[in-house]
Length: 327
Image (cartoon, rainbow, N blue to C red; front, top):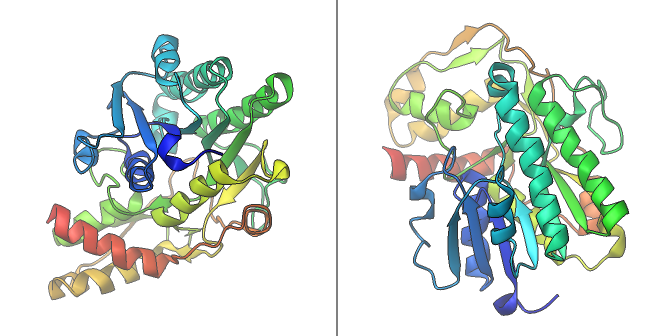
């Protein structure tokens, strides 16, 4: 791999939560960063701190349009493919658009990357691929049946990536993200992730609604752990490390009740009234898996992954960011 000063990375969905954090990080290491985004779920304000950076290029385009993909990969060394329509409920409400973006768009990006002779294609896979598999922790080579249209699309991504590796020699790495959270994650909209949504509600003294009894558990993964995995995925020189998938998580699980307890504790340091906001319990959500916990042994062993942020450590940073940026 060349020095970062001469290395160009394309980040699809680079104006989104994870993509904009990756853009900022790699610009800080003197990489050239191209962002492709159609702003359907990403935001211009996520690019504000680096939009004028000399090494940053924004291409407004859509991965569903092959011409946009071909333009974006020109002269690119590595692709970090983050563009997708997330959210299980959104996919249940609108499976066609979810499939168009997550499957057809993914295939466009793979094809454009192959034709442009990109060195490596690293993509956001998903813990939803484990579906109805019962075992914990989740190990990469044991998956179940998908439980939502979204989960199907993310599994299809892995199948396509494997075929492109075997058939065309394109190096691919899939990162199965587990419940990523942190700065710049959008608290608004119908499909907002649970942490920013709860933070905003608590800051406004509104009662958060937990789906179910609050005992469902998740492997909540702070954004900086995810950045570390993306960096390892493009810099590894180990030939055994490519053309496979890795869990991208902290390797621990917390219940939604734990999560709300921590949020109230850290937010109360800014506003003591938040400690007394009550919690409301609602029905379980369709397509939700009860428990999620990743084994991160494979990423540790092959990539040297060493996540620095537990849920509590990540929440302290995230809560501070939300308080200072959204209050």
